[in-house]
Amino acid sequence: MTQDKKQISAEDALIARYFKPLATDPGAFGLVDDAGILSSSGDDIVVTTDAVVEGVHYLATDPPDTIARKALRVNLSDLAAKGAAAAGFVLTLALRSKEDAWLRPFADALGEDAKSFGCSLLGGDTVSTPGPQMISITAFGRVPKGHMVGRTGARPGDVIMVTGTIGDAALGLDVLTGGTVATALTSDPAARDALISRYRIPQPRNVLAQAVRDHATAAMDVSDGLAGDLTKLCSASGVSATVNVATVPLSPAAAGLVAGKAICVETLLAGGDDYEVLCTVPPAQSDALIAAGRAVGLAVTAIGTIVAGHERPRFLDGQGQELVLKRLSYSHF
Image (cartoon, rainbow, N blue to C red; front, side):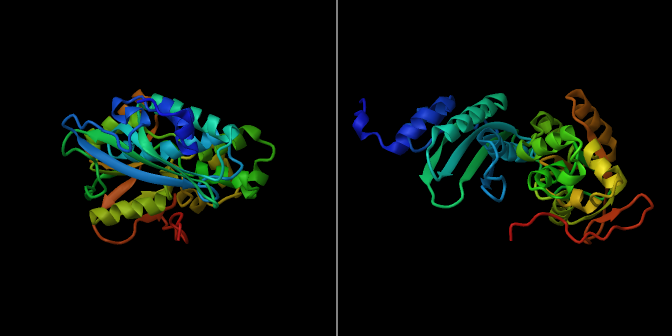
C-alpha cells in the first residue's frame, strides 16, 4: 500500500532522501523495514563496530564528506585486519539538524565508499541530539569458516609487520589544531595537506585482507597507537615483543619532523588514527606477505619480533637502547 505523504515523518523523509539510494543490497529491503538480512553463504560473519564523535574523532570544521568516509573506513580497517571481506553495514546517525548542505555531501561520500569497498548499507537509525554529532557504524564481513585472524595467535619467533606508514594522522590533527607541527611545516603546504588527509580520510587496507588471512598468526588494526595496540595484541596472545624503532615506516614528512627535532618518536608511536594493519607472521611467510603488499602497491614492513614472556613490548632505538615511552596510545578515559 502506498503511504500517504502526509503520514511520512521527517525522519522517514530524511532516510528516503539521503540513505535509501545507498541501500542497494536486496537484504536491505529499500530501508522500509526495521531489520535487514545478510546472507552468510556458509562463511563466518565477522562483526565490528566503531563510532566517531564530533570533537573526539573529528573536528566540527571537518568537511562532511570526509566525516562520512572516516566513519565507514575505520570499521573497514577492522575487517581488513581480521582477514575478512566487507559484506555490509548498518548506520546510526545522531544529528543536531537536518540541513541539506551537510547531509547531501555526507550521504554522497558514504555511498561512494560503500560502492568502492563493496560494503552496502543494510539499515540503521537516525536520531536528533542536542549535543555533539555522532556517527556509529556496525560493519559485517565474511571469512571462510574458522579462518578469522584474531589477536591471540602470536607466537615467539613471529615477525611483527605493519602496513603503510605510522604517525601521520596524529600529525595531521596537530596541523589542524595549530600545534607545533603546523608551525614546523608553515612553508610546506603539500606536507601539511598530506598529513591532514591521513587524519581525515583513513586508508583501510582491505586489498590485503586475504593475504593477512593466509599468512598472519595474529592481527589488529592500529587505531589507538602502534605502541599501545601492539601491547594489546601481545597481552591477548600471552607473549612479549621487541621492536626496532628505526625500522618503523614513516612518511617523508614525519621522518623530517623527527630529524629536525620538531617532534619526538613517541608522538608517532602513540598517536593513533593510523588505521594500518599490525600483524605477526612466521618468518618463513614474511616475504610472501611483503610480496602480496607489493602486488597491490602497499608497503609492508618488518619492525620487530615476538618473544616469550609477559612483559610489555620493548622499543629499541638505533643503538639498541630501550626507549621509555611515557604514553603508549590514545585513551578515551
